[in-house]
Length: 96
Image (cartoon, rainbow, N blue to C red):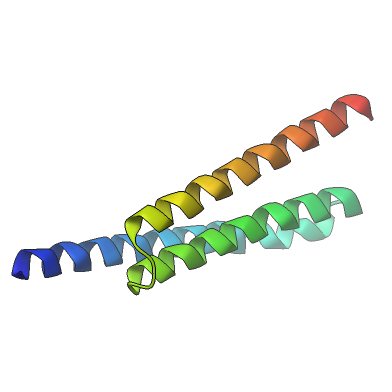
């Protein structure tokens, strides 16, 4: 029983570190949005919003509100959305 508790605490700390890293990425990128044109600013803000949501999912996992399967599912969904955003952005650049 004690081993489960130690493992769970370790995973919770790791999840919180991951959330903090994502927060730092967003915090460093956010000021750059002011220098972008409106379309690029909107796309970048959408991208950063996905990272904020993923950081929140890591916090939910750390608090025990979701399990690892749900965290994996949400993480994969976020990665798919980000990939779609990149594809749409690339397609838009080619046609513009």
